[in-house]
Length: 186
Image (tube, rainbow, N blue to C red; front, top):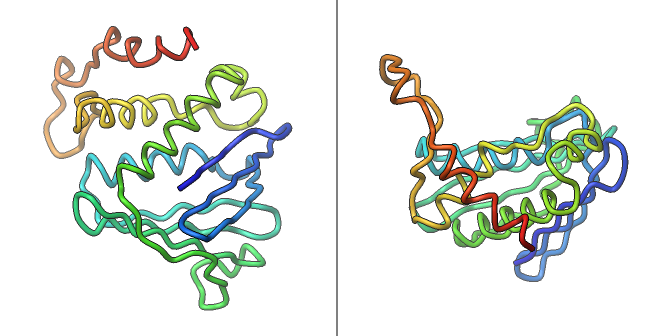
């Protein structure tokens, strides 16, 4: 499995994904927060134990729809559908480009490795400058890195399922910086 994501110019990214013998290439634009939405969907499958998540990438004028289904704690179903025009999304007119299963942890590793490279190559502010409208998804990135290191997420976002206790909602900056520090030494 391979997943490559790099910023190729102001407001444009290039994405290469290879799973089994399937190789696909995409060029999402800044009109959607492509990488941020991807990371947030993986976090929702992980933390909130959602069974599925959908991400839309705008390629102007086409759209790419990623549908993730977490079948159990180990397996992830990935379906990627191309819609030639944005008004078709979610309708039967889309063309399925990929419909496969892989290990959830393997996909998370590939995506977070690419996030590492985005940070190393562009920096946090540089990512924002090049991607234009969207910040680097740092909180989702940290949660996924934490999962890969500890087998679970110990850095969590707030949840609407309980009354707000501000002391419980704080995160540990040292833990977060410990995750980021190895990138600086590469």
